[in-house]
Image 1: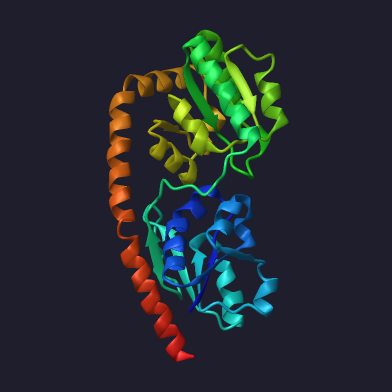
Image 2: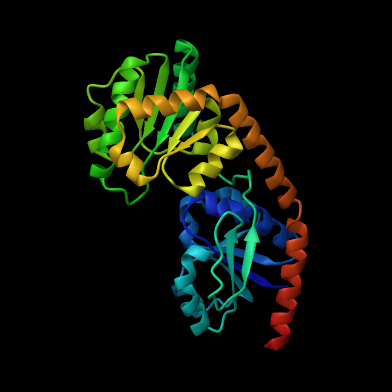
Amino acid sequence: MYDLLFDIRQETGRVRVTVRLAYMMGKKGCEVYYTDTSDSVFTSELLKKGIGRIFYPDDLQWFAPDLTLLDLLLQEHAAVYRQHGIECLLVTTQEEPANSNRDAGILYLPPSPYTPLSEGARKADFIEKVEEMKEGRSATVIIGVLEKEDTPANRVEQIYKAIKRHSADHPEHQFVVLTNHGAAEEQLFVMPENIAVYRPQDLHALLPLCDLALVTDDWNVQTECTFAHVPALVLPPRDIRRMTPHKLGSRITDMLGNRECLVQQQKELCHLYELENLRLDELADQLMLCLKSSQKKR
């Protein structure tokens, strides 16, 4: 009937927001595709649902979708689609501010707890290790996700020093630090027994094992914490660079002391998100009308 393309930034949280809608559009008869910008989370699960993949921008030489749903954070791609005569609709979440100076409409999608990721043996082994830490030591598990893809190592040195000191003073706290920097391991070495350092993992499976998360100001990670009902201590870059063991300990103590209340707030927020997700079928119908209108203009 219609070809619909999703061009979404390569982040699990951003792609996941669109997957329910993609499935719905497929059920309504559309041929649905994602660009290779979503490769980090594009799995066989999507292929099994009949969702295809194209390579941006090369495949636009022969592939002309009736409509492209373009991630607001990839809006620079809009010019390329215009060159090929392809209509775009910007997609974002209700948590992100809208900028009225756009030459395309904006479709707002609520955060979604759905994940297309399949579990592999490597992830299962990692989860088992974390479960052993939690059960074997009856510890409070605190996960640290304090880096973005482009975070320089020297900007996280101070927070890792503070974590190391705090863990030494609080053996009842088990830290699981996810990092891509060898420099982080140097700051944590020699590590106390209650610190474990790993490369970034799928948070969807890991977070339910945690009691508290230390995260940077990354909306995707914060949303993952919300759906997992894990309170998140959000640390902007300035706080990360200037963190001291005393400040960190004080903030962790406050968060853990209010954990029950914070979890309840997250549950209420998740309920609101789910109500918004129930409206996706209505949004899918609106998109079908948009596609029909676009085809008539051609």
